Image (cartoon, rainbow, N blue to C red; front, side, top):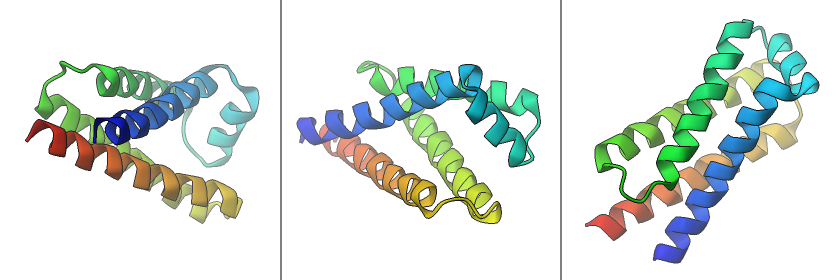
Length: 117
């Protein structure tokens, strides 16, 4: 059980770290966010929140309530990103990736609760 939890959590956290980095330093990602119609301050805000979320998910002693809020926030981000990419008519690959990441996030959350209860 712990292997599934940690594997899924590391995958989600790696995605969040990489995404946070790209939101700040990748010119193509920055242009893509602008093309979706989001203001620049929102990109910076999301980068910071993703970085914080990745760290919280990886801290074993973080409180359950804090982790649950983090899962909810990341889930909301993934759903919002999926809607934005659908509306923008982006590649099906991006949409499938977001759906897969949502599944991995759900698996991580389920196994965290199994381990702690």
